[in-house]
Amino acid sequence: MTHFISGFFVSLSLIVAIGAQNAFVLRQGLRREHVGIVVAICAASDAVLITAGVLGFGAVSAAVPGLGMAMRIVGAAFLIVYGALRFRAAWRGGEMLETASAPRGKVVATALLLTWANPHVYLDTLMLIGSISAQHDALPFGVGAVLASLSFFTALGFGARWLAPVFARPRAWVVLECAVGVLMWVIAASLLIGA
Image 1 (spheres, helix red, strand yellow):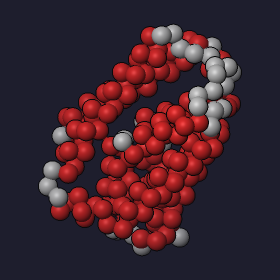
Image 2 (tube, one colour; image 1 turned 180 degrees about the vertical axis):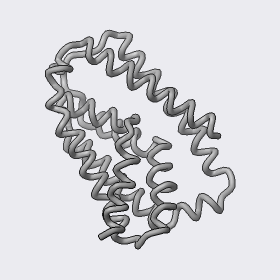
Image 3 (cartoon, one colour; image 1 turned 90 degrees about the horizontal axis):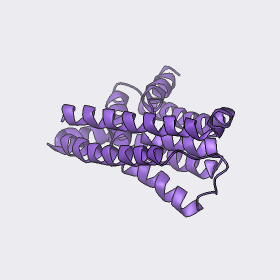
Image 4 (tube, helix red, strand yellow; image 1 turned 90 degrees about the vertical axis):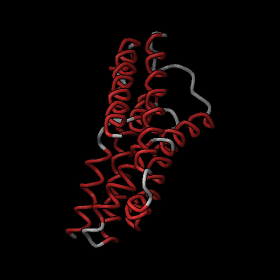
């Protein structure tokens, strides 16, 4: 049980930090737009990556010189572009919760892109969780980590509706978009400084 609890809290502590993926889940939850599929994509993707990390990706990345640095540089570029898109959305004046629903295919593609092209997902799930899991019994640790991811994305996506009255005003969307843009650029800078 100790290994399960450790896996749960290690995973939760890494996932809770807001990033591109979490900001998208929050945004979809606020808009009440394809929330179930977005939560499922994020949680299932994390489950695959956490499993790969627990099964030994940390050892692979240690054996391949430069893999970590390459992931950081590509990741920083991704976050800079995503941050710029958020600033552009803020510049355009925000939006209302009642806007027309985005096509499901576009939402799915964005969720997949923000998950699988996001360097923090790999750093957190493969490298950090993978290396920490080596100190625990892998199966309960991995199950705890996967359950934390599922719990967090479910709570974020479906719990966002309680913030809907705040985001009924376009100005709140402008603030959110600017905050996410700044956060993406700060994370990109930290990745480049660490490279």
